[in-house]
Image 1 (cartoon, rainbow, N blue to C red):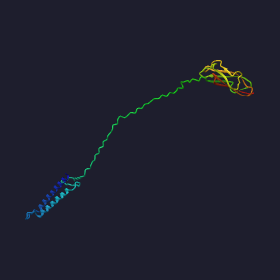
Image 2: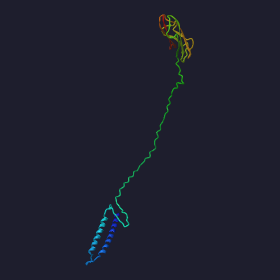
Image 3: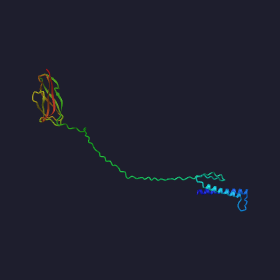
Image 4: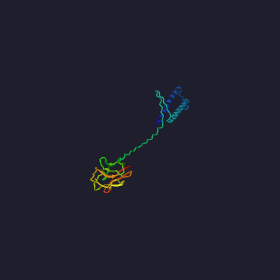
Length: 240
């Protein structure tokens, strides 16, 4: 369609140019008829020029649409340049974003089991003492007392009952175990009274120092139904 418009425009320009040329020629050389009724040489020249002009117009119409065509009008219209270019091919790509709604998120349930640890309260608990327990409170004469050969003396022990059971003359006895036998009488003594828990027992035994100078020690014990549970001793040094 665009090429057709250009062709018609060029054709009109060519016709207008021919018209002006013809008028000019007729004004200079009027046509002179020939004998055979043809045109004169001047008219033949005009035909040739017209044909050339039309042929040039047809050639210009055949110019590809990419060339530039200039048109000048009498109203000083600025030059319009039209360039025909091939329209770019636009490729449309559609991306479909598919979202997936997650199903219900599982909830992790944690189960806590509380464990209680029993801690013994030793501060508020008084442990029960063993049935038979003793503490040596005092010893006379003191250990390593110096004596003369054959000197008489009394051995004294003060013992406390720290056990849970009471001591009686039926179950508790003071018995010589081993060592230097310094006592004058028997090796076994019974209690004269009951000794309860926390009470003191005083044992007094008549003794005599040996006749030879040396160090001597005699070991004694308390027995409960003939089972020993408490030990004590006498220690002296004999000098001449």
